[in-house]
Structure formats: structure tokens, C-alpha cells
Length: 289
Image (cartoon, rainbow, N blue to C red; front, side, top):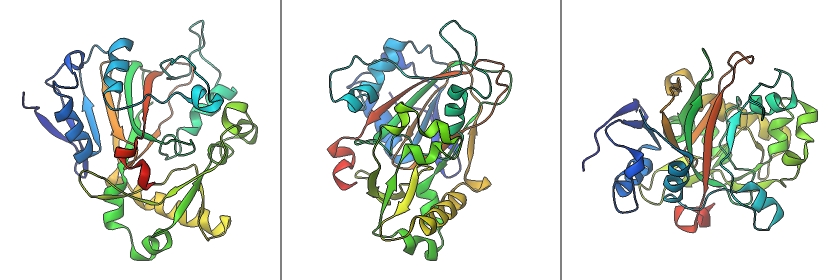
């Protein structure tokens, strides 16, 4: 089957709206989807009836499911499908200034998922479940496109350098108490190459995030300015794709080459996205990180 696609954004991404993800297997359609993922960095599927079972099965085609509890405790922990949500267990919503909502506001900084983990992520596979009446978009930019146009003076400041990443660093920008929460403070800083080469397309991208706080060999103060300048350049309006969610949307992006952020919504209304990150493997560039 030939997948019909149309552009998601002029610089990256495609939309696929003629398949049912329930029927994707390792042999059927996944090779074509993986090719689109590697080439375009983001793939949007529309009008999906996407059960948790299908979500997990589909994500496993990309690799090992990211299980943070298992990673943190170094012990076997049953995988639970993560939810990006302001809903409580009884269906009500957290207040705008509750610590849980502040944690969600951390996702409104331009970031790459999981750069602070011992094993970073290859992909995020995310599905809309409950959508508010307005707002709540997810915005994406390609750091391949950003790198292609990055001023040389900025490029030279990160060329052949590593960046340190910390979840506490990004969360303290939202609230100092949030950064001290156990599920955030437990992650020790990690150091990764600032430029990654896709092993399939051979294209380079900038590997950066709001979690990044120091450039190898540069002071933290100067590092934060350089990192901020790079993120600001990559996230200029002409590079941004803003996705307004509809139930049935499934969006995949390449964590090696995409920055993203959430947008505000009326916090008195529920918003829930089901999100599975897939961990990098050696063949996905982990060995070159």
C-alpha cells in the first residue's frame, strides 16, 4: 500500500490520513511509516480509533517503551500508559496553581522529551483523548531546519560540544518547589552531543531542550545565554507548526530532531493526551550521543 501524504509544515512533517493504525504490523505499513518518520521527523495520523492496546502495540514497533519508574529504580516495574493530563482520579481537574498543573506548565517551555534520562527518547507517540474548548495546542519545530539556517557564530559555540541536561533545571523556571519534587529531583544531570546525525538520512539536527543548562567548557551563565539564543532562533514563527488537537489525532515526532511545547488552555476544563516515549537504541544513534 502506498501511503498518501501531504505536508504538515513547509520545513518538516507529513500528514497521513488514509490508514487505520489498528492494522499496522512490523511487516505491514510500519516500514513505510518508519521511513516517513526518519525523513520528515513528524507524522500526523487523523481519524484514528486508538485504544490503549493499539497505542502500546504500535509504539513497540519503534523500540523499547520508556518506563521511567523502572529506569529510576533499576527494577522490574509494570508499564503504565502515561497521561499528560490535569484530571484527577475522580475526573475533576487540578487547580491552576496546584503543583500538578505547574508540572504541566513545565511542558510549555520549548523542550525535547527525556534528555535528562540515562537513556533518552527516540520518539513520542501521542494521542488526543480529552480536548478543552480552546487552547491546549502542541507546537513543534524542526532543529534540522534550525541548524541549516543557524548563524555561524552560534553554531561555532556548540560545534563538537556536549550539553548538560537536567529536569530540575527546567522545572525551577516554573516554580522552585516543583524542582524539588522527588519525581523530578531524582534524575542526575546527563551530558549529550549538541549535534546529532540521523543514521538513515545523514542529516544533522541540534539536540537541545529547556532542560539544557551548560555547554561543555563554558560557564553556566554564558551557556544559558547561548542555549537561549539557539532555542529562540529555532522557534521563530516561520519555523513553528501549531497543532490544534482533535480526538482521533495521533502525532509522532522524532525526539532527535524536534523541539516542542504545549500551550495554555482554560484550566477549569480537562485536557488529556496519552503519550508513550520510545527509548533510543544503539541503531537509533544512541552510541553517537
